[in-house]
Length: 304
Image 1: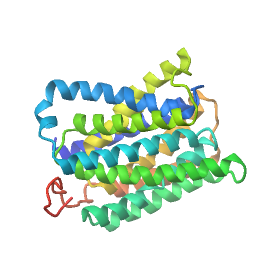
Image 2: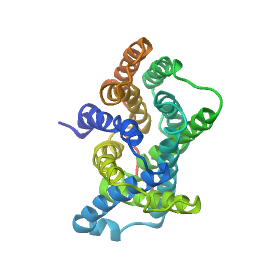
Image 3: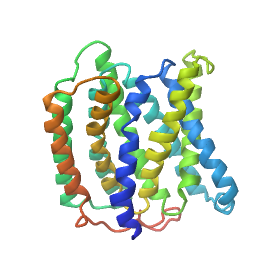
Image 4: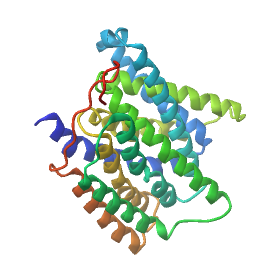
């Protein structure tokens, strides 16, 4: 199977299923949200960098300054994304947090056009619009206003913007770097950043229980390694806008996990919105959607 089809029809569904467990797993933790975000990224980084140091040493040694700079920016963005996303889940409902974070395809499409020169096809825009409409339908019954919910909503929106920047940088850097080096580095930078933020906020890095450690292990292996890292692999073979819109399937699966594991019975709007999201995903991901391959921008040459 060609890499593009493998990314579109195998990698993305697997990553989507994995990433959808994130919200439920995070809600099972008792540690401060920043600690959860930090240890999640640092654990995934350790696994990936160990692999890279054994099998990708030449790739690490040949890193160029422009690549290192972009890895640094990507690491800061993914760190802020996980910090905001994890904190949002404790300040607003899971549905509202997922809804607002999943507005990122709009920012991805705009940023990919501005910085990568990727023209987002009309079919992808239609898929984005339909899927976003489905997300709104899912979250409309749970959207809270006032109190800490407003803070949580703002955090979720910030998570959307930072995630969009992270995806666009990943699309550019992944053309010249393997996924282990790329993801291992950005996760590590992000994890260190969030750990520093936790310490500045007066949180002890040892303030966690055995249960937290077990949940963190699940967060590392499932939504991070099998979710985000697989999406990072797909970024080499698919436009950033397509990868971004595919993640809009997360509310459907997150609602399902919350139903099964947290006994949160979804309202009728979840089923209506879910159908719209799946329809939007089909429109955006069908083989007719094509975009030019992004060139390696680790050099001054134009491209993605």
